[in-house]
Length: 78
Image 1 (cartoon, rainbow, N blue to C red):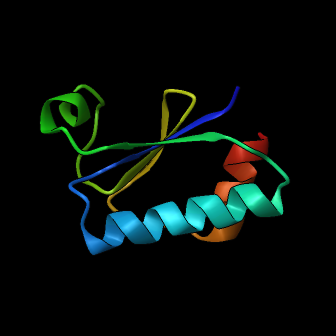
Image 2 (tube, rainbow, N blue to C red):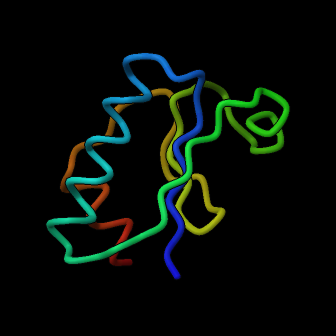
Image 3 (cartoon, rainbow, N blue to C red):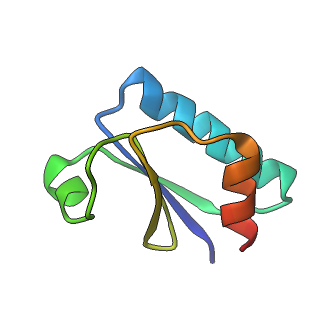
C-alpha cells in the first residue's frame, strides 16, 4: 500500500501540496492512502528544514516548496 503524507500546519501551501499530490496520484492511476500530519512533534521526527513537506512511504521527497504534478507523479511511480 502506497502512503502519502503531507506535513505542515494546514496552511494554504499545505493544501496546495495535497491537491498536487492527489492530482499526480490520479493521473498515475494510483490510490495511495493520504495522511495529513499537522502535529509539530510528529513533523520534527522527519529530517526537515521547512514545511510543507511530502513524504512517500516514509521517505521525504520534497520540503519547503510545492513540486509540480509531474515531479510527484515520478516519485509515486518510482
